[in-house]
Length: 180
Image (cartoon, rainbow, N blue to C red; front, side, top):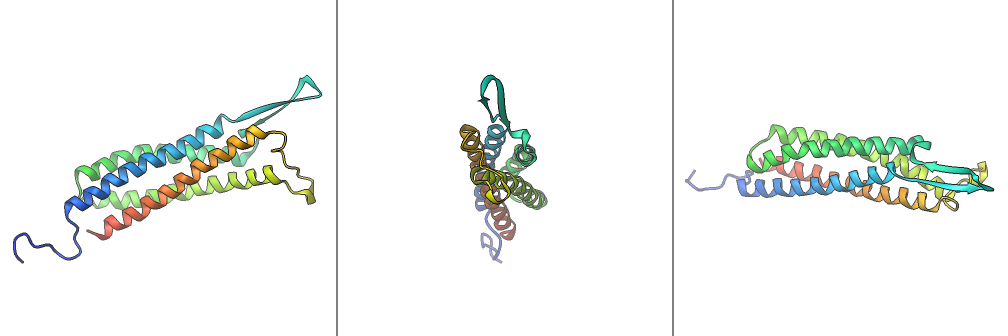
């Protein structure tokens, strides 16, 4: 083989470095979505007066276990994504790191599954809160707790954006590994 010739199936280091930089920025976007969703859900509450100002009904996220699971799952994934930034920086500096890329691929897949489980559980409760089920006398509470429901729905948007970015990160890791 001549000097300077390119081997088939091997990406040049500049291409791998470009993938690593994209990986880093996608992780920052995923952190923003998951952390914003967790904070928005954890700080959601609304109080409504009932007949008088002394008797009140209060809606908080931890009244519903599915919403509490969502906050815990989103917080765990956010913490993982913050910690994984170190490996992402390592891939920028050292473009040939394979073992850490495989580790990130596996952990990103687990994080995506956890975040999807939390988001799906919360989405089911939010749908029930918006529409209710009249056959079993579960009434929609979003007519009364309007700001609570809007804020909870908004936190799900950030979380599903995080799921989408994690899927992109998994695909990007697969592409980076296949180029080696």
